[in-house]
Length: 327
Image (cartoon, rainbow, N blue to C red; front, top):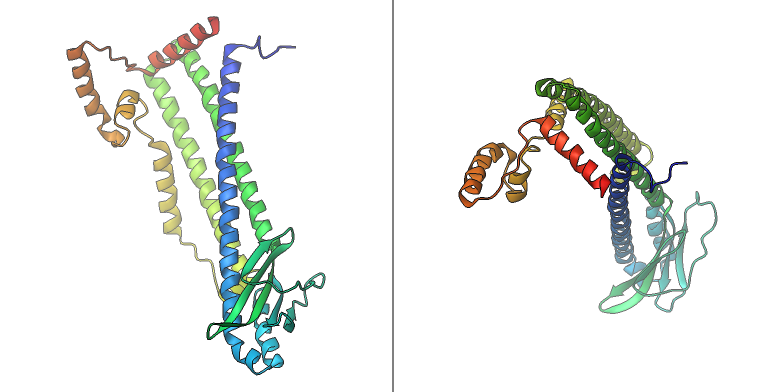
C-alpha cells in the first residue's frame, strides 16, 4: 500500500491544498454559525422583552384594581406567536395573578418562581422575566416562555448550507489542481497557446452558463419556499396570507446574462506582481501599470519575472514542483 511519505509530489500537493481549504472553510463556516446563533438569540430576547413590556403596560390597571379576567384576556393575545408556549403575570408579592398556556403545546409548562428583569436559555427554550413598573414602583412581573424548536430548525438549515458550501469549494479546489497538471501535459505535447486559451475560454463559458442556470432555478425555488412559508408556517409574522410569487422573464434573462459575464470575466490573474503591489486598483489598469513597473525594474537593475504565455507559466510551475519533490 502506498503511504503518504512515498506518495508522488502531485498527490501531496493536492492533499495539502485540500486540507488547507478544508480548515479555512471550517473556521469560516463555524464562525458564521456561531455568529448567527448569537445574533438570533439576541434578537429573540429583544423580541420577547418588547412583548413582555407591552403586556406589562397593558396590565397596570388590572394589577392595580385586581382585575384577573382582564389580565388573562391580555395574555391570550400572545397566542398569535406560536413559539410562546406559556406566559404569566405575577403580582408585587410574587404570587401568580394570571396564566396563559398554549393549547397546542405537547406538555404543560411548569411555571417557575418569580424573578426580576432577567432571562436564561435552556435546552428547550427561553425564559424571560420583565418587571411591571408604575410611578417608579414595581407592581408585578411578566413571564414569557419561548420555545426554540423553530430557531433550532433554522440553525440546522444553516449548518446544512455551510456543509454544501464546503463540499462545493473542495470540489472546486480539486478541479483546479487537477486542471493545472492537465494544462501542463497539453503544453508539453505541443498544443499551442491559442488552442489552450480557446479551450479554457470555452470551458469557462460553459461552466458559467451552467452555474448561472442553476443559480436562477435555485433562486426561484428559494423565493417560492419563502413565500410558501410566509403564507403558511409564519403567517402570524406578516398578518396576511395574500402573498404571491411574481417571476418575470426579463429579470431572469438579465440575471442569467450578468451571472455568466461576472463568472467568466475574472480578469487580472496574469498580472500577479501588479496585483500584489496595487491590490486596491482595478485589474483593468494592470496592463498599463505593468509597463511602468518593467521600466522601473530595468532602471534599478531588478529582475522582472513574467510568463507571457500560458505554457511558460505552467512549465515553470511543473519544474518548481519537480524541484521541490527532489529536496
